[in-house]
Image 1 (cartoon, rainbow, N blue to C red):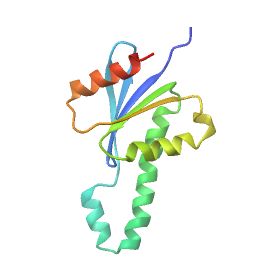
Image 2: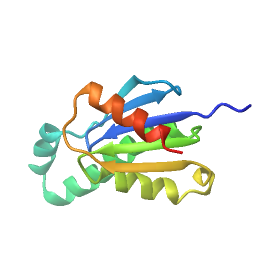
Image 3: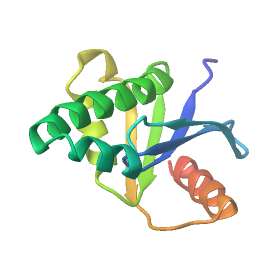
Image 4: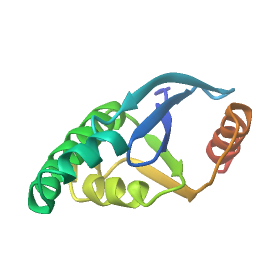
Length: 128
C-alpha cells in the first residue's frame, strides 16, 4: 500500500509554515522566509518604483520556488492563510503538468494559534 504524503502550508507573502501530516496529526516541519519584508521593501522603494517592481518579482519567485520544492513529492497539499499568496502559488503549480496528480486544497484564514492550525489541517485531510 502506497503511503500518501500530505503537507499543509500556512503562508502569506513573507513566510510559509510547512506542516507534515502523518494521518494522525500535523507537525510543524519548517518555516520558509522570503527575503522580501516590509523593511527591504521600504529600502528598495527609495531607489525607485520600477526597481522595486523588478526586485519584488524576483524575490517572490524565489520564495514560491522554495515552497514548490517542498510540495513537489506530495499527493495532497493544503494551502491556507490570510493573503492571496495561496492563489498565486496555486496558479503557478497548476500550470505545471508534473503537479497534475497533486490534490490541492485551499482556504482563506486569518490569525490562528498553532493548535488551531493543527486542528484545521487534521480536519481538512480527514475529509474523504
